[in-house]
Image (cartoon, rainbow, N blue to C red):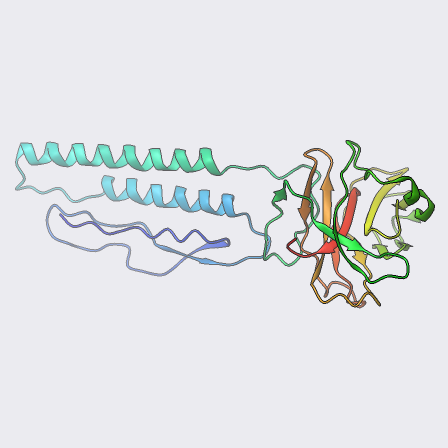
Length: 288
């Protein structure tokens, strides 16, 4: 009896069948493969766990189909038939156990209020237990990167008393049907037409203009948008050579999440991310 290995290329993307022969006659008593092999083509923003689960289910179906569709050997003895039945049962058990183990270890849920996009799609939105390095712009000094300050439970940074002297606030009433633009310090917010229904008051708060941190909020309408609202960080004149990104501070988990900002979303060329809701955000060094 000869076996044919099943391919399992776990790479993010869509599952597409590669045309191959569905059957192969290996002789009396042999297994007749009927499952198609698969290749993976990358798709931006696809779910690794979901794709892997789909692939495993496909491979499991292929295993069971091969076992159920094997040709009977009319010359086999009763003992040989029992051996084949036992082997088939063990193969089913092991394959099912592997599927269950992978599902138990790899199923993670994205937060309900996660950002709309992960930027360039080249990285995941995995949270980090360590704080990123945000842009620090001291008055009259050279811009550099500094570890993000410790955070309160409500998502506000813990700063010294002098920070209040450098605090900035911008607010505007925006019609969701028309959209609008708002700026606070180096952060720029662009609300596209149709982002939400009705009129809402959008507020941007920078607790210290020397630290690239902004807290976004909206009132009058739900904090959930139909289309992505663009948040950009303007690094003009900072002379920073390291790539920049924008981080989201998840108040539910108290973790920072790299949103993998892109510079080709808007004509300005600023590092930009698209948001499905407002939260605290920081501009800093990519990859911290």
